Image (cartoon, rainbow, N blue to C red; front, side):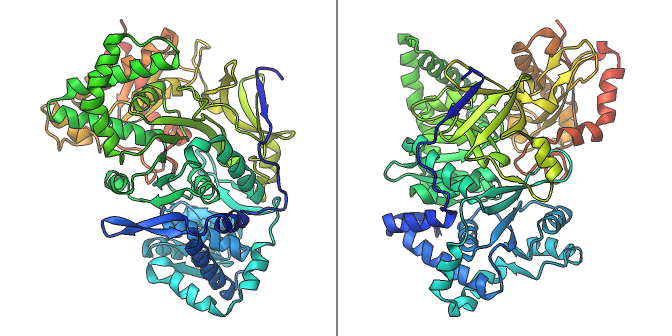
Length: 610
């Protein structure tokens, strides 16, 4: 086995006959009275036991059967992250159907494509607004027989409709699927072209859940383990975790409104979190701006520096000097303990995925007592292929390969994956499927490297590598991630393909900007256009660019940048639902701004070239 390939054998023997419904049946048999979910109830939460959840699943599955859903039928689901999401998911498994999740932010035309391509015969919509979007394209999807709207009481109606269906019929249907059968059809949000449907099998989820539960034992198998899900369950990352939680007996709560996240964390008090890096950046930046507003910005920044230094020394196995230990203890009382309390006081682990976190935040949260286990995976790998584990973690990497999975690097550094988690095919798209595989190895399109102990580091996307006119290869992520960490920066796209130097398009973060402006004696209600031209704002962005430039060679450094007076959002078409940038779309839509960077003489640069 070369250092560029790591195959880790499965810990749990495979069961080709098992399906996802079996995970719930096994859980109920083992611990019927264990609280498997909690739902908001006044200012607190009401527990739902494993047995209660199974009864609810069966009642709703009967409704689907009574409504004419047959085994193998595709049913689309557009909704936010709530208890009902996982209820519907398992009810469809018990009815023998195949769910096609749709992001709740999807436009009517995106919904239309997914419904027609998948061949869905019914849609479950959470809100009247979701149902209205489906209605817009209803004439284009003649196969869709029913649109059920949860806000209008559709789930209760289905339960009532299903009372005549026998338990035996549900047991028959839930047992039909074997491991190799399709479990779900998830459309990749895709930063290019039309989304492709990934066929994920029952085995993909069952085997990955069983092996991950062992690899992440300290996270999910501890007494009282609980998590609050707030990232969209339509995305494979949260969907996999919700199924893993049922298998492992983790109590799961939901909070779809991220503005309510801190109060929900305070009342739910989870033991671990699942998040994307943007969430950790927001927690850090909000804390920093709050400290700044209270005249304690200096203390906060000193605390952050000490936290990062302390954690870095521990990871390197170096001795922590007495002075650092004393400062750390002081800041633990003054700063870290308050942040821990804000996250509910019990969080010890956080699983991060979908984009690079960066060592700075990893070390900062580690010092708060929260170990961020960064992982790596795609829709096509049913989420994780590698993940840092409680007993085997390195900040700055995406961890070792999971049991049952193989990862290798091609000659050009492209990461390729095989194993229990790799999808079957792209739905009705044999050309795309053939192009995505080298034998049994799935080509991810990402570039990475392994260290001697088998920890993977992601260095960029193969398609995103910029080659300057001077022939220098530049991975944008190494520059973009540090800049995006700045509180007032929303998004960054580094450009420079076939150009004489590297530059960047930058947007401001409208949520963080008002607090930063107020803390810097500027009007908090300044428009994005005025802020983009404001000298203090430009100087702050310049500071972020300087920090990023320190991490690369001069040839790779950003010489010029433009602050745009607009936002990139999912609605504007510039971000995917998981908040990744659609690079190609941005390069097209802002071609004039890019052209201006390279035609205006370099002496008007925003950037100090010294």
